[in-house]
Length: 242
Ligand code: NAP
Image (cartoon, rainbow, N blue to C red; front, side, top):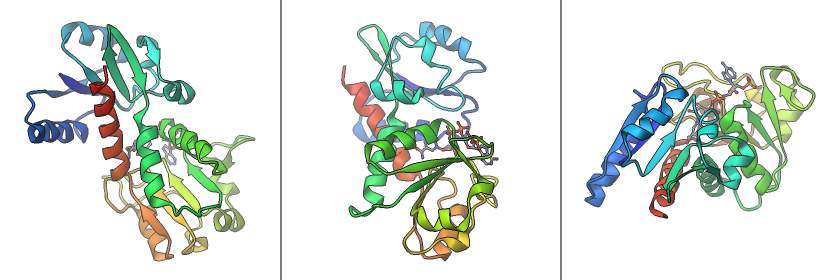
């Protein structure tokens, strides 16, 4: 048995993805939705379902799950967020496959000669996974947040120059996600050009307002679907490796 913990889970994409995958593979596994009202209910869940071999973790428990785990992978430790739990040799090991998913998807999106700087819109869990990958790829970046901080840019700080010079802009905020599809991060879209690469972690809708506005300026665009599939496949690989 496999599954996902989070709250709410009614719109979660993972159960149908894994159920279809298991059916296509002809294996009799189950991928269940475990909607936890609070993270304190996690130990009881594990006791109740001793046959669980792997779990995904989603909002709002990617950080609060950590104290319940025995070991963390180096990546999960660095970003202090877990979206995949491996049950191996009586231990619960926390991994972060959002990092793998984003890295693979970015690799296919950016040209090999890319040599500009990046802006990461938002400072939550996904933003930290994105920053981890940019560090690894030696792409300089700055975070953009609604709150002011010495190290972080605010949306008001984003002048035309910064937008013009930052050829990779990654939206890690929920702005524009279904059903609030009219919203988009507040940047000066007129400064975007065909030198810009806009990556939105959102996958529903397929083309967010952020991506639409970038496309109108001739920018390259990419949504979060491939990242989502890659993080799920990376979880599956981890669960098979015990
Ligand atoms: P999170 O921890 O809640 O962080 C989101 C960040 O966005 C916040 O820290 C906040 O940063 C900013 N934000 C929130 N509401 C905002 C608003 N109304 N206006 C402007 N900024 C706002 O969430 P997360 O786990 O990082 O996930 C973020 C998004 O990525 C979600 O849409 C999620 O579905 C998506 N995601 C996709 C994948 C994938 O595989 N494609 C994987 C993980 C996450 P500030 O407070 O600093 O402004």
